[in-house]
Image 1 (cartoon, rainbow, N blue to C red):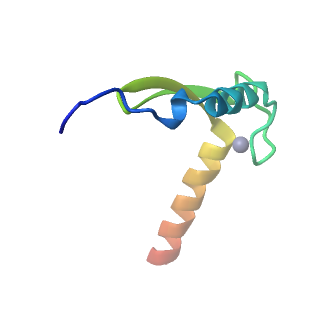
Image 2 (cartoon, rainbow, N blue to C red; image 1 turned 90 degrees about the vertical axis):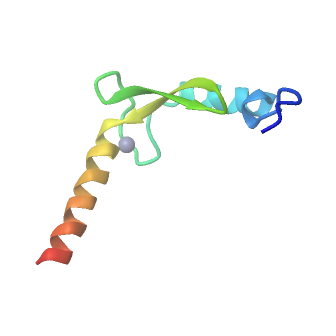
Length: 77
Ligand SMILES: [Zn+2]
């Protein structure tokens, strides 16, 4: 792969910065869980060689896992 010049990604745009700030200002996740320190964990992701931190809602994560488990049970039972 040729590395001609640093490619402009979405994360370099002012739009992303605004989006990021909006996210930081959020008090609830999309499902309505409170985004407190106890209910969130920070996950470091690397994309396009760039490190950034995303906040994961633990309640949503649990719900996701539960759904997955329920799906599994359904297919088994
Ligand atoms: Zn949530």
